[in-house]
Amino acid sequence: MSRVTLDARRLLCPMPVIRVQDKIETLTPGTILEAICTDPGVLNDIPAWCRINGHKVVESRSDRAEYTVVIEVGEAE
Amino acid sequence: MPQLAQFRIIHGFTRLTTKHNMTEQRKAVALISGGLDSLLAAKVIQEEGIHVEGINFYTGFCVEGHTHAIRKKDQKKSKRNNALWVAEQLGIKLHIVDIVEEYKDIVFNPKHGYGANLNPCLDCKIFMVSKALEWIKKKDFDFIITGEVIGQRPMSQRKETMPVVSGESGAEDLLLRPLCAKNLPETLAEREGWVERERLYDFSGRSRKLQMALAAKFGFKDYAQPAGGCCFLTDAQYSVKLADLWRARGSKQYEMDDIMLLKVGRHLRPAPHFKVIIAREEGESNFLQGYRKQFVTIKTISHGGPLALIDGEPSEADIELAARLVARYSQGRDADLVELEVEDREGSSHALKVEPIKPHEIPQEWHI
Ligand code: SF4
View 1 (cartoon, rainbow over the protein chains, first blue to last red):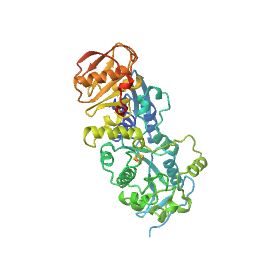
View 2: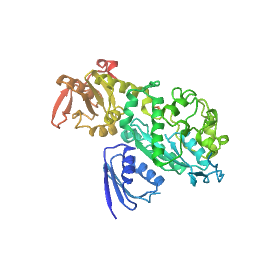
View 3: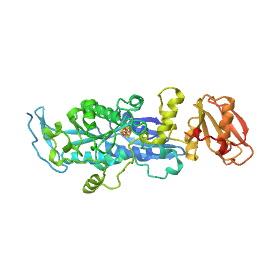
């Protein structure tokens, strides 16, 4: 299973969500995307965006000033 | 004349019509701002059995996000993004589109002018609908929905502006406003029977009562009701700061960092060629830290205090004045001398001891 990292640090919401969305468009279902961010808002916004667009958040963690959300890309409709 | 609906479906089931001799579900994209009107407009059309997806445009000035990520006192507040929340309530996909660069032209030269502040609402609406039109063509959707209501907003939502938005955006009768459709000429979706005109609404005016009643009927609670508009450009104080920035630069221009910095800190301009941005609290100081390589920064050493940036090309004397201002907003405000550290863009720093400026020495005009 391929794994891709996205650096969305220093971007404020909704920019990290837009970056995740645009990245996912280029990825195949099943790919794991790891988004590294600094805006704590991503812990709400990325999972919300994933829920409505059919992707799965498999992990989210925060480490001091960084917030990482790990997403499994869902099937495209 | 195309064949009309093969299945008449009410309340959430699929409406199928023939398109190019194939049975196909009609699809609409809804402009979702995160407010109540766009939520209701999309819901009304879903109830007609249309497949709805949402589109949300990010201009850089949107009220969503940002500030609660910056100010510490706001960090505990719910950080919900209302556009995403609306999409989730409706069970629809949401496409967020970054239009920051293209949008600058709208802010600089709005053909239809500004509203009460620097909000170019009418041009903004036209632009967003034209982007939605591009989108539906690319994605093979059938029409566009907005939550516009005649008379709701003094500048952009009047009876006369409705045809301006549909005409100048190029959308023409592909644009349906379900909340006031009955007050407007029939659009394609109504003519073709994809939606039933009779079940659309005739809202008008500034009152929110009808929208609230409809929200209650659909069972929506806890929706956002932005007071002024959907972006910072409707905010008087923000507009004053943006106008000041344009004056100081001698032209209308901005970058994303400028938009963000105008939302943060106290802004004081002692002279046309520089201004000082002083954090108001810890969250803002942390945020300004991220700009250390782009600006001269000042922070207090001898006392607790905020981080400040100097925007412009300050001389030695300007830096000293800025330091006196920063000292004034530090815990050393009443001390004889406050020691501060000044760091340039390359990262080299030096210490400075200054007397905090007295309140009466700060002319009111310095505050932007
Ligand atoms: S309030 Fe801002 S985003 Fe909303 S229509 Fe006016 S300019 Fe556009």
